Image (tube, rainbow, N blue to C red; front, side, top):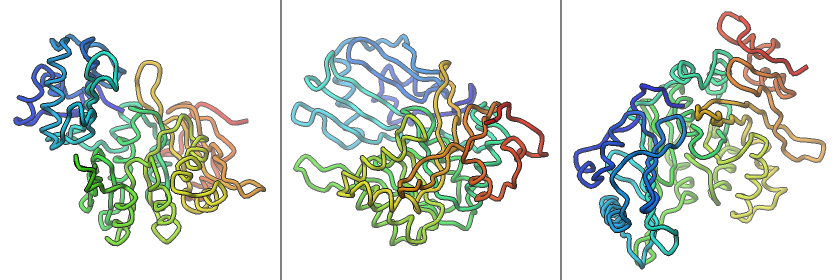
Length: 365
């Protein structure tokens, strides 16, 4: 979900010197990711997929020096005794580095570059990630305080879409965001960011997302947001959304909206929850799933909106409400339930756009 001209990152002065030959890449406003594969080459994502770039950084020893230097800038240690690091660099750049022998071919460095701006839903529509129909649906999801999860693969635009949705929250609402490493940027006057902490070299001082979700519930949040649900914190999140915290949300790695349930079962197992317990909690905690994906040409788009329901056995299932792509939506079995919940009337999906003019091209019939 990156426009060809949208500013994405930038290199603070203190970071530029440490980046060496990578500094120019992070100065490119289109770049969202920079990947250094040992001594075999450097890759970058400018919004249209990962592509090789011509950067003079092909010696494994120079890559290791770079990785160690960046780890120190993130306040962490990277050596044979501590061969990986996951941290935050100045300016919000997320760093991951891994040393041999855990990775073959020399040290590998991955940099996730944050946006300078926080795009709105209208921005995403202008870039082709949404259309008038999906914007109307998403605005209703926020306005009606419906709890939702944004699903998708790595680099599909989950965090970007979540930030755009939260920017549309009422300015009087207090949004508390819990993240492992801060990535979510929200253009809103009342946002509190909580960030986890890794254990130090002595194995002490770790603060997990599970702990932070518990802490955020004591901070009078109007919206509880987990930047990425990936572990046992799912138990606290589901409990929070079942106890009056409406409009909560987060992101989750999944290949399709329908995979949300099985992913929640797997994460619930990490928290000691049985599948039955997960379904019981999930049934009243999450209402809507928004799935994003990348086209073959690398463009990021919203491709499905699903509503969670329960079957005759009490198990949660995801019913597609609309699927396809912006401008060519297909109505699914969940549309009637979703449109009723969002107050969108009884029309077809493409009738909810401004002016009631058809903007979708499909039909579920």
